[in-house]
Length: 56
Image (cartoon, rainbow, N blue to C red):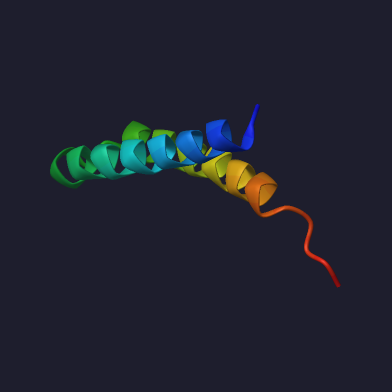
């Protein structure tokens, strides 16, 4: 996976979470919250990989 693929995946994940959140606000379905948590966890892993290892 290239860096540009990671950036695109991170942006897509953000847009998915925001879209699901709008639906969640109306329905309050717990499975939507679970899906948002899973997507957010994947997004954090991608972003951590993008930022690289911190230099000390």
